[in-house]
Image 1: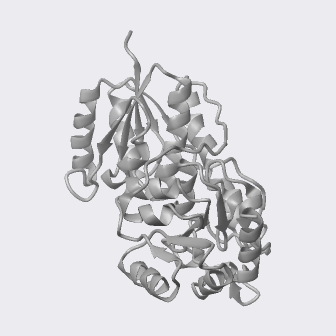
Image 2 (image 1 turned 45 degrees about the horizontal axis):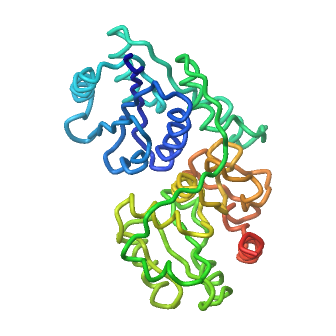
Image 3 (image 1 turned 90 degrees about the horizontal axis):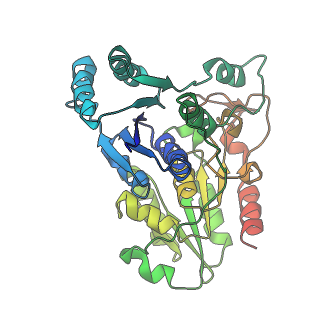
Length: 340
């Protein structure tokens, strides 16, 4: 009997793609007769390595798949998979053009509802409607439900038995409490003032705690390297491991601390509890890490929050950016409670 083959699109951003992986893992566990073709950027392929009956087909939006002609080329590549359904989990210009090609060719499809009006009500300056929106993972799941595949999400962290990266083998063989830190984000309004991390590192004994710094480019690498040089129990992971091995390392942590960023979603993928710090954004928008708890969100209530869904807009609260309202003492106290 031929398995149902579903084409799934989610090109970016990194955290959103990781959220998709959590949903597809549940989908495959509940529907053994399904095969998945995941269309995403090649650097995100490691998120899907452990999902059975799934093929990652890379999109190169700045090269051979650029513009309508490039998407037509991609469409012709994908037709070779003998697809039955199309699940558009992105709903942006590129995915809509690609979906239109499949619709015109007679394929059955469903498209993500981004709830733009509800999100606008959550982030507007006046008359803000501060309420929990439907979680993004449930919106992803709705796409498959609309295609005729019932799906019940557990919203639970599931620990994974993954190998230890050789580069950090010595660090993981000690009795120290291992804490991951993902202190950076794409937008500045989601980044907790970096000086606070020095307070954190100073508070926790170097003999009992080891910190691993994740996520970033060249500039962030230099900051993490400076911390590593200053504090004997800080390890700079940035740029030192491929994505799959980063996930391996995260799976051996006792706790992750992250901004509203991909670090939180990567920790969710491998079943690690995460304390998340929120400023201009808010977990009510639906982007809390899969299986993570609202009780582990560190934030300060203010009438101006949130200012945006993605953290790309300033959110001034009493003369400070919203993220600055979160004090080092708040984070340290929450960490102490989590690892007690």
